[in-house]
Amino acid sequence: MDTVLLDKHGGFAIVTLNRPLAMNALSHELRRDFVAVFKDCTEDPDIRVIILTGSGKAFCAGFDLKELGSNDSNNTAEEADNVIAQAMEAFTGPIIGAINGHCITGGFEMALACDILLASENARFADTHARVGMLPGWGLSQKLPRLIGLSRAKEIAFTGAPIFAPQAYEWGLVNHVLPEDKLLPRAIKMAQDICGCVPAVLEQYQTLIKDGYSMLLDDALEWEEARAIWWAKQASGKVIEGRRKEVLEKGRSEKE
Image (tube, rainbow, N blue to C red; front, side):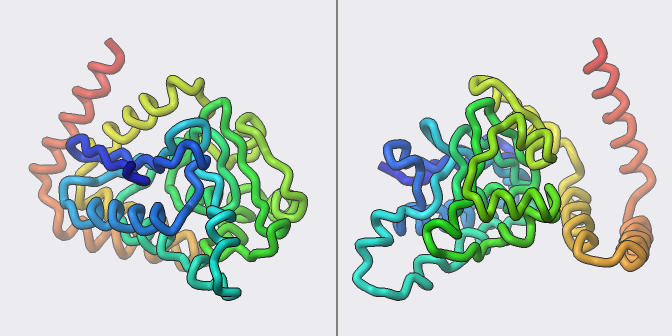
């Protein structure tokens, strides 16, 4: 059985973690397959958006601790390296996380590497790094406080207690909470909408937000202005007008 499934649909791809009986835990095989699948998407110029989800009742339960515990080596550094985070970072388009169930520790870190998060009503998030004796290395300790605030992030990290989908929405961790059967269709609709963007602009906009977010506001505003001027010098007025008409037509059709 393939541990990671890849299903391409025109401009977007659905990547599914596929170890449902093990709550999609990150075995060595799954991590290897995940990197290969994301490399495939990154190198495919037709794929502009990825939807990441899990099969069964879990999104991802984190590292396969049973496999990790059976490792003869006392050094877990190789197992805890950030090849998954690097593979996700290498994809320049948006990644939509469709969190269908348990999203624990390493799975939580994968979710935070996504650009947009949707959750099913069954989703729950937890960070058990401190309880199992490991430190996060894929960005959780830095990204989570920036999303939900320092005190709430510390509560999650230090207690290991789960937060459920409604609370995750209230705290700003996820954008939408949906019935389980509506989760993937909503993610697909969002991916299709994103694919309607001008591909080159989508990539530049993604970079603009990511790079600017790590800057001081004044520096980020200067950065945005400089990039906008640079892009405007390359843009065609006729092409922009054509796209404007397409947007207007789409808006009218959605109202009807």
